[in-house]
Length: 107
Image 1 (cartoon, rainbow, N blue to C red):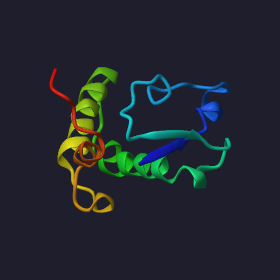
Image 2 (cartoon, rainbow, N blue to C red):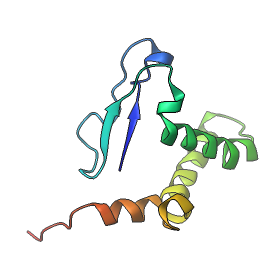
Image 3 (spheres, one colour):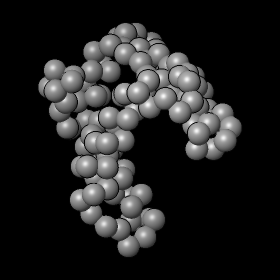
């Protein structure tokens, strides 16, 4: 399981290092950079943006940033832990990731 980004250089004009690059990602996720301005190389990211747009942003309006941020946190929880995905054989992303992660040892 993995994903690629162009480091957001198209948006920011400089390299952007996300938590995927900071070492906080689970070991089952690999990250690699793609060539800038090549959305066809970033299918997973583009699909994620499309789903967010269709299932979250287009369905509601927010009076201010704080309300949008609070609703977005709820959407992220539903998306990652409750919403099944046909691409993941009917599992939620958190279930798929848990299946890929090595079991933790008891201390």
